[in-house]
Amino acid sequence: MRHGRPEDELVALAAETAADSVLWTSDVSPYARARDTRVTSALRDAGIQARPQGGCYVVDISKPRTKAGAPFTVFSPFHRHWLELPRRTVHRAPGELPPLPGGLRMGRVPARGEIDVSPAGPRRLGPIDVSPAGPRRLGPLGDVTHAALAEPFCEPGEPAARAALAAWLDGPVDAYGDTHDLLAEAGTSGLSPYLRWGCLSPAECEARAARRDSEGVRAWIRQLCWREFYAHVLLTHPDNVRLEFQPRYRDLEWVRDDDALESWRAGRTGYPLVDAAMRQLARTGWMHNRARLVVGSFLTKDMHLDWRLGEAHFEGLLLDGEPAQNNGNWQWVTSVGVDPAPYFRRIFNPMLQQRKFDPDGVYVRRWVPELRDVPLGRLVEPWTMSGEEQEAAGCVIGRDYPAPIVEHAQERRRAVQRYQAVAG
Figure 1 (cartoon, rainbow, N blue to C red):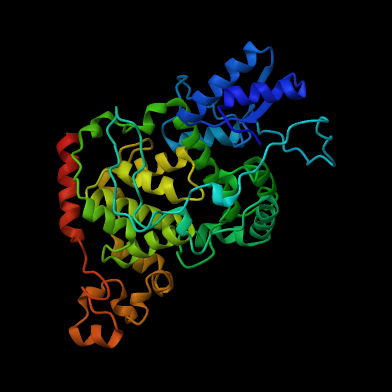
Figure 2 (figure 1 turned 180 degrees about the vertical axis):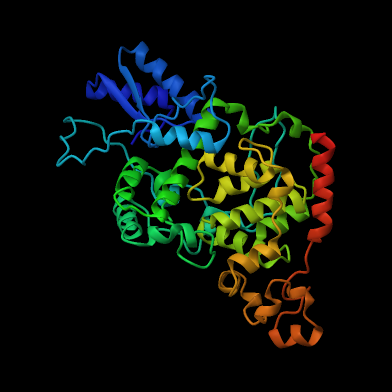
């Protein structure tokens, strides 16, 4: 364990161990690339070889290019090209590791109490600077922080990761194409936190999955490709961290409403599916991908709030929060990023989404217990219950559960007008 600037501590550690090279897993975010540049320069000045490795991906994501020699900005042709690229070699784990050099200063892992991650009591929304030139800063997250996670999504560590991969590939993956959007089902792999933190090799995931020949496997491998597509995009377009990829949408006017943003972050919008998803995120550090699309659309196209606010909130809570994926997905659902589609095709109706992907109400009832006894026929729109129905269900709108903070059909029309105004 070392504490200090990477470019100082790694050079010192290399000298301490008489190393002639330093290897590490590279990343694509502008922060990581700037850090790696400093480390590489310092190592070379000290006569030590720098050897970053692309271990987070199946292929070398710097290589894909269109026939015109440009980086890809549309997924489908990237996917076709990616399928033909050479794969990184999947190596077996070594049988043993050589002992560390004698006399090496081991350092000390800080105790839990020495790392301040606890919120200082309930906090209201703080400012988040989302201007292109301003520093990127995450404001307070109310009372939802990593320290507040009550039901962590997955057990940490490589043994747990490998067990989860084995269980997924033992059969559930074959149904992935049919079940991956069902919110209450175990239709997704749940491996994203392990991939994000290097507990699993995506190259090994693909290689092992490909041994099974099924539509589900092919659909799941395609999702691994989406992950690499967004990494390729951020690597080749680092300004995406701050700006919309499509310049015409950089003039979109965003609403500033701290109360509405706080309601969204706390899962108190009055829309059951949106609230269930936001509470799942706050309690577990994870959210189903279908739900991510719904809450992202709701923030940007029903509430008309800046997508960067949603990106920052997710960044603060997601256990699988990779900068490239987080940024790419938020720009996708806001219709301002790569892989463009007409903005009106990505305005998700939260009621229709709930009927389609949580038809029995299991997901909503789990995460929004106020709605537990609401009849299924009213669960999508609980505000339509009569007064008698509300009392019988123990869910009086405005007292036990909020009324909708916006009216979806009206805000959809408003969103279309806003996009039309800048799209021409």
